[in-house]
Each structure stands twice: as structure tokens, then as C-alpha cells.
Length: 284
Length: 338
Image (cartoon, rainbow over all chains, first blue to last red; front, side, top):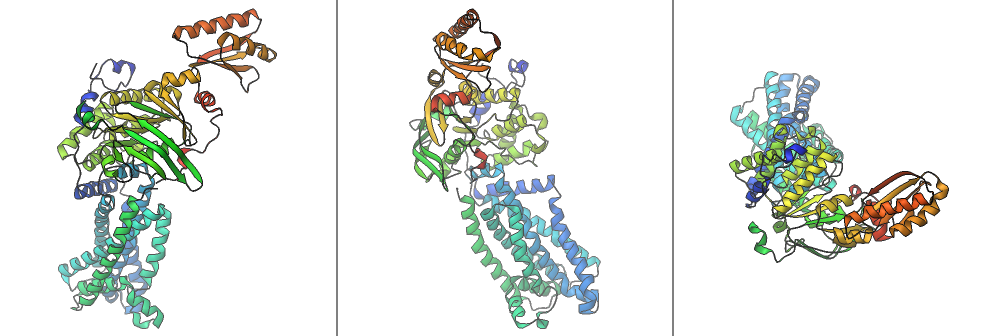
């Protein structure tokens, strides 16, 4: 009786079909998954979760739709005289802001993961500790591109015509998504520290709302009081929005803001990635 | 068996003075433990005794506060990755992605274990078939029954056959049929050369599966030995009797203590009492003893309403081993998660 199946009933115990002993003996060969393989596995996992539960995308769609439509018609007439003119200024800003805001949902999901039993199983595997976070970024890229497509699609439908054409729009999207990924790492670090998705979303909201509204997304800072303008000028989201505006509208003036955006992206990444890694490996 | 003997000099687990402190709470208070390779070792104790904490430390998910711990010869603090490559944990709570299918769960874990595409597909198919889950393979795990989940969970721990498998209360909450399936599985895994460390609240489970058992209480090991050794300390069976007349309880107590040579405990029910019967050299002697005791009760005119003979409950075993009842302890769930 060296090959017995797991009996599913008393009858099945006497009628083995699958040799589990052979299965166990055959499974002893060990390989190591490299950092990239493990990250890709976690990326696949995140994409599969998205496929099984597409509701997750609702967050990433609702904010871009709401912001694009609402702000265009709410402020368009008042600020620029017509919605068409306003779109030229507003849409790249709304793109930047929408992506920045939807970044928080990735952190919320990581916090949920951390509380699940699956997290212990993953942490018990001999894989690079950054793999789960990096894999999560993969599905974040998908979500950010999805949100970008919604903003751009709506903008085009409402009459926005980017002078920068496809290359300008593409460059702006790449820049905005890159900035979004650095924020993803920030929320990943927060999620691993607080381990509660509601708290992650509260913290992210408390940070993202001032960044979004105290910026140059909606109005030119020249009308603002000095103290507010000082904040708006150092707000990285202002620089990302300006860079996106310059790239999409082909103003030929994108250099400085693109540089500032990339510096902000790099700084947030370099600060948050090591913290997130440390927190992931933390054993209580 | 295959590579088990390659570094078989090292015990599966070696712990000296292991402590774990959460704030004021000493979850583990000096555990000394040696688990040889190639056996099923049972960790028996009530909720909150420290079973899950011990497993989390051994599986490198939590850090010990003090003491020396080596798993398969590797230090848990400095060689965590080497341990992770060779052990697997099936937790008390499902460690699977609920919204993914059973098949997808196994494929992803296979990829994380470094199996190439064809190998992980083959392995996932084989495990699902072996665990009678082929029909459910394409359904999200969230819709699985408790027994299916537990089987898949154990299957997920066998994507690569581990040298040491931790099973944290593998049958808690399962119906008897699912429990038997899991037991059979544990025996198969052990027979294939994997050391199994299982925690349980049930004496019967430890008795059924484990060659050696450590009884843990309030973060300390209070007894360790083979099932037979522990039973000789606890009594192999317990006789529960319910009388027709509570007035006769002292009399019955006296007769039973004499006839069975065991400790008689009055139960909360004024009509009931229980007797722990010492292990008999021949199992049939227990029945003979009980028959004799019943005859004596009958001769003395003591009427019996109910009579049952069973294994001592964990509570009774605890009382015998620790001198106190298991009591309402905090559950393992409430320990801070890593």
C-alpha cells in the first residue's frame, strides 16, 4: 500500500486513484525564484485579483470621470470664459491629480493583504522581500493607465485638442504614471506600518487633498496670497501638472517642470522604497 | 528517504530557553524542545497556550525575544531564508487568496517557489487531483467549504515537498469526514519523509497522529513524551457515570475508587462523576475492570442512569498534568499578528 490516495469516503480509501506518495517524493527538488520572477508572480496575482473582482477598478474610474466632467463645467465658464479654453489648461492638471488620488487604493489593498493569512504564507517563502510590493506596482501601472485613458477619452470627447499630439500626450502620461508609482511606494510604506486599510486611506486623503487643491491644477497661483503661493510652488503635484500641461499642449517650455517632477519622483521613491522593504521584512 | 538524510544530523527543531514577550504578556516562557527528523510531533494545549506563537517563530514569521532556536540546523534569526526554503506552514486561518481560484492559488505559489511553467501546472493539477479538488479547481476559493479550504491550504504547502511542515490546528472547525481526510494526509506526508509539527487542542488528534507530544500551558512545556507515556500519567480512559440518585454519590465514589484504582472526580452535575482509569497492560483489561466496578455498584444498590467510557478530554488531561483546569485563556487569535 505504498500508493494511497486521500480517501474521500470510506469506499474511496480502498480505491486509490492518485498516488500522493509519489507526488510528495517527486516534489523535493528545490529551485529559487529570482527577484524578478517573484515580482512577476505577485504582479500576475494582482492582475488576476483585478480580473476576478473588476469592482476594484471602479475607484480608478470614478475619480477621473467625476473630476474631468465636474471641474470642466463647474469652473470652465467662470475661469476661462469657455469650457473649451479651460480644458486646455485643466485637463493635464486633472490627469495628474486623478492619478495622484487613485494611488491610495493600492496602499489600501496592500493593508488588506497584510492582514490576511496569505501574507504570512508569502512572507514564509524564500523570495525577495520586495517582490510583493513590486508586483503590486505592476497592477498599479495598469490602473493608472486605465484612469489616464478615461481622463483623455473624456477630454477629447469634450473638445480638448492637445497641440503636443500623441507624443506629447504619451510623454505626459509616462511622467504622471511614474510620479504615481512613487506615491504608490509611499502608501505601501504607510500600509505596512499601520496595517489597516481604512487608516491608510484616511492618511492618504489627508495628504492628497491639500496637494491636489493647493496646486496650480485649477487656477494660476498668481491670484493666490503669498503663503499659499509658496506652498503651491513647492507642491510636487504643481510641477507634475505644469509638466503635463507643457508636454500635452506643446508649449516648448516643459524642461524645468519635467526635471522637478522627475526629481520629486526619485526622492519619494528613494525614501519610501527602503522603508517599505524594512517594514515588509519586520517580524513582530 | 531521498534528501532527508543529507543533513540528518540536525534535529528538525532545537529550542533552548525560547521566550516571546508581547508587552507585559510572556507568551512563551522558556521553551526547551528537540524534535527529531522524520516524525509527527504534536503540540497539545488550549487556546492561548503559545502554540501558534511557537510555530510563527519556528517558521521565521516572528522573532524570539530570547533563547536559541534552530530549525533544520539553521538559526531562525540569522538564516531565515535557508529555513524558509525548506519549511511550509499551514496556518490556523486560510492562507489563500479568496478571490483567486484554487488552481490559480497553486500556480502562483509554484511560481514563487521557482517552478517553471510546465512543472507548476503539472504539480498544481496533481495536487488538486490528489486532494479531491479537481472539480473545484476553477472556482474562487471564497466559495470553498471549510474542508476543501483546509485541503487546498495543505496542498499549497506541498507545492515543493517541505522537509518540515507546520500544521497549526489543521482540523479545528472541520466536520469528522474532513478531519479524517486531513489525518490521512498528515500520515502520508510524514510517511514520505517530511517531519510534521502539528498543534492541536484535541488529545485524540495528537494521539492519532503524533509519535511524540509536548503539552504546552501558559507558554511552558508541562509534559513531553510519547502518547503512551503521557497517557500513563493521565489515565488512558475516563469513565463517566450519571447516577439515578445524587444521595448515593459519595458511596459510588468510594466503590469506584477502590474497584478502578483511579482518581474520582465529582462533576458539576450533582448526579455525575468521572473516574480516570490508569492505562492497563492489556486494553481488554479496561473493560473487565469497568464491568467489575459496575457489578460492585449493583451489589451495593447504586442505580445508574448513564454510563460512558472515553478518552480523557484535554481538560482532564490538563488537570492531571498541570494540576489546574485549562480555564478561559485568551485565544491565540488575539496575539499580536506579525
